[in-house]
Amino acid sequence: MEGYWLTHYDVGAAHGDGIAMLHGGELLGGDLEHIWSGSYEEEGPKVFARIRIAPFVTRQEEGTMAREKPMILSLEGYCTEEFARLEGHPDQREDLLFQVEMRKCKSMGRAGAAKAA
Image (tube, rainbow, N blue to C red):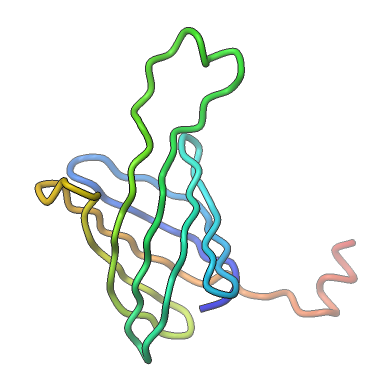
């Protein structure tokens, strides 16, 4: 699963898109409103993840905006080389279902990276 992944998530009526980087069991990423960090494990095609989602708040917003608190998610699902689907719940919120689909970003390779630079 290592690499960059485009993500789409649904939680109740809310949904969003972001990007995640997975490397060596660590997951980092975010969307326009949240920062994600956590860990993942693979067992064949099965994937297990534990992710902390924190709202993104600029320094100017800290004193004026009430934002939701960080939450911890436990997710499980499956992956292939190019696609992953996981679902789960925040800790102590079995009523709130998170569903995440991920599509692996295509690598430019060394030649493409050199041309882009």
